[in-house]
Length: 174
Image 1 (tube, rainbow, N blue to C red):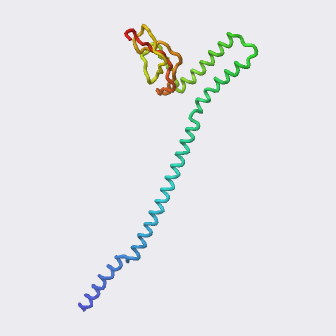
Image 2: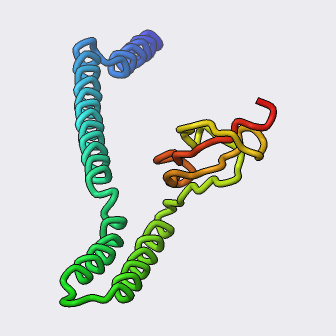
Image 3: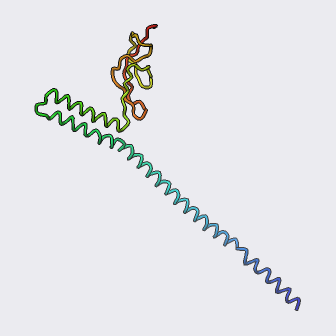
């Protein structure tokens, strides 16, 4: 009887081990399923990335295309004022001057709203980042001082759009 018990115990011990250890085929199938899931997830992530890249490119294109929309709408009032001045039947010089001054105020307000500021450097020290010297002239002012502004410059958000055209003092000593 003891021999029977030992045989049963040995048999019981070996069968559970066989059941616990999956076969190589089962391991291969599980690995293939996992690889397929990972490949599918990778394809989806790749597609999502491409979609995001495409949407970002479209957004950049729209931003570039319509960046000046608000500025342009502000300028429409200026254009309307100029057109109204041109269709006036018999404008007097005084009325035209008043109309031009009001139109200039509209334009200046539109510029200010979008941080487009003028550069009028009369009497300031010459700055090659904001000024373009056209001529150097004799002057009583210190050397490299702007003595004449031929054309105002403009700056948009601290970036020079157009430098001011200026004449600069040569200085007394030169």
